[in-house]
Amino acid sequence: MNAVAVVSIYVVTNRASYLKCDASVSVYVAVVWTPDHPTGPGLLEGLCQTMLLVTNSMRIADPMDALVSLQREVRRGMPTNPTELSPSIRVVLDQPNGIFRYTYARIEHGRVKSIAIFVHHEPINGVPCFNLGYAVPEAYRKMGMAAMIIEQGIQELRCGLGRHGAKSFYVEAVVGTENLASQRVASKIISDAPIAGTDSESGEPVLQYTRLVEC
Image (cartoon, rainbow, N blue to C red):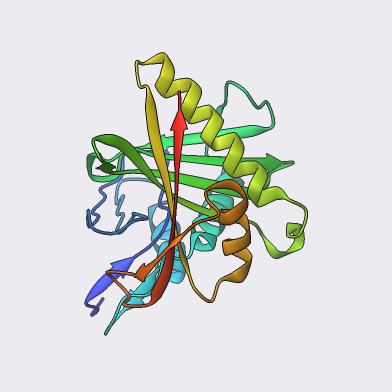
């Protein structure tokens, strides 16, 4: 594939994947290839269809791509794990390029209704930080599902990290200035005082929302 960069949001198989990601990108995933897996060709084809091939410049990553990919894998029978605090929420933990990523999802009757993705990022003032991405299919929007899955994900992280000795952590959401719906959610759940800036990859104007969570 002749492209300067190949970026996907979520890649998963039921075997070990060969993943490559750029540590400067907030939401990770890239190329997967499982030639020895019986579903390898179909998976690769589906991955290519959902990848963002960027030939000239990057754009702000869209977590909706992650939801679409997760939905596809759930339909193929990919297992997910129960959470501690919310019986209706499932979690997938992986480590692309050694970086922890938690994907929390509301899955009902095999349908992914919302996701919140927390990617371990550079600390803020020595405190661990997770970059946040979230998405809800159009059919389930305006029902409060985005805010609910984010808060449930934060509380699951708080519980798990606190049990392992963490005292606090930051959650950071970077939202494009034109994405008004995501801004409303971030203002409600993360912070009502975002900082304006420019996305380092796409060059687009963004708002940075940060929340300190005590464990």
